[in-house]
Length: 364
Image (cartoon, rainbow, N blue to C red; front, top):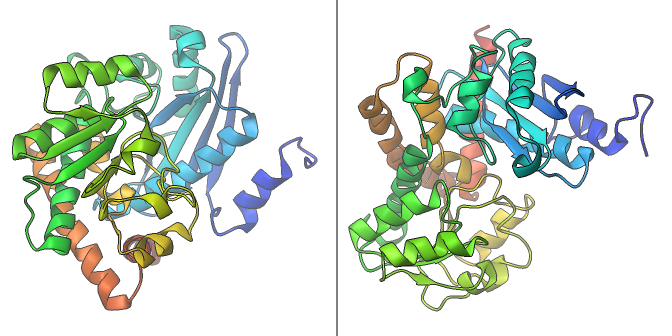
């Protein structure tokens, strides 16, 4: 079913009528010469210009792409608020297989669309886009972060993303076991790509036992060859069932926590880099009912956005790392608020973020 514009009616209902909507602006972008089809979603600019990455992915349908952009943009509003940034939330998705259609012409066309928003949206890297891509986009758009140091940027943001997740894990350990150390804890990392492999390095340095999986077997092989102590399992289904698993770190795509995975999850803590880990709102209660501590994804994976936001003001790595280290304190504060209010941590994080955004709106 479609509306008069030809857009899927369920997408428009989400945008205008559901609690998951409420977005300020959604832009559909097309450049037929380069093959670009993209969606830019701005959820909120209450705290400042919307900031969020560009995902390049072969969606099954245009409707799926719009839905993903809406969900990701909303998540960025909460992430940026909890990270203490003066930025709202936005996200862009480019539809298609980046291995097949990504080109300089397509990225330049995309940059022109971002530039047309006049600074209401600041873009960066995400799944399927890299530093080199942002260098190209920046040729058409000054509101681009995640660029290479050679082009005035901060470079790869996955380093601080992983560091922030590591701090979230330490906070989770402190809250649950009374000690932030992960030494001798068994941590399962699903997805050891851009962020996951840096997280593995932090865990090994502290003396944790690490189990990994990834759909790309060559990436797993690279990890195990560098670190023979790392154990690899066939897939995520095997990982979440590992006996005596202390922490599960989803570091790939979203929806990792769902009605099928939560009942069989052996870990006591979930803390990972993937966005939108909860498949639906009821999952957070299912986790709590099983006694599994969930560190909200958009809180612990904010190291990367802290880095790209800093790039707008003249990047300083030490300053960014100090800000990312505060994810430890923020995560502990969320757990304390959850206990005080008698709600799951994800709901507590939402309340804190919504309060900050509401206060910003009243000051306008």
